Image (cartoon, rainbow, N blue to C red):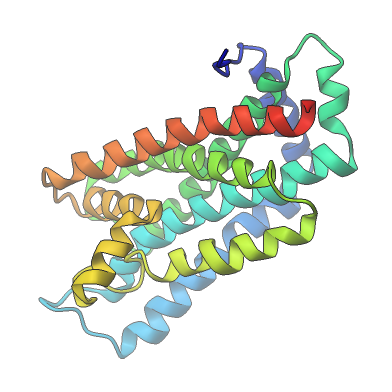
Length: 257
């Protein structure tokens, strides 16, 4: 009989536990969350942007800002549910301690993923504020970048948790970042329009989950909408939910069997 993974509202307690740890260490966490995306944004925008011209004009810095926000929503959730979750599971044995309480294993994993989504939201908020300070936001619709970041965090946190359920050792995360996450960062439309790629490469790029987040952010920050954006949102929702329940199932298999 197939067991459908489920969780309860007790998952909030795991989210709460991770939140409390985060705010105890907020000074070091805040610097990491904000410094790298802002450095990338400014270095690429002001550095490379001085030599790059967009078809139809426009600021290169304004072009890459939405992609940087989407990318670091991805990175934040991915790090949280790979290295962070693995350490709590295998080294600190935090999962074992929590499961000894009335919380179920699914509650623990759901709480971990929800916290990863919240971390993505926090990172996106900080970078969006910086983007607004530099005049890179052209529309009040940009506020909707924040719920999109949360949904991205749910999707990438779930994906990372599925991978975490399969790895034999912490060193295996190097393959995930080097062969999947980093290439997606460079080939999902963050730094150049996907229309500049060959047709086969465009199709491959649109298969990547990040490309849909980049497209949504770019439209929201510019205030330019099209029916294609509904497809982008649907992909994030459907893939995110599918990966979320898959993560509950694969982590249960790892920890119980």
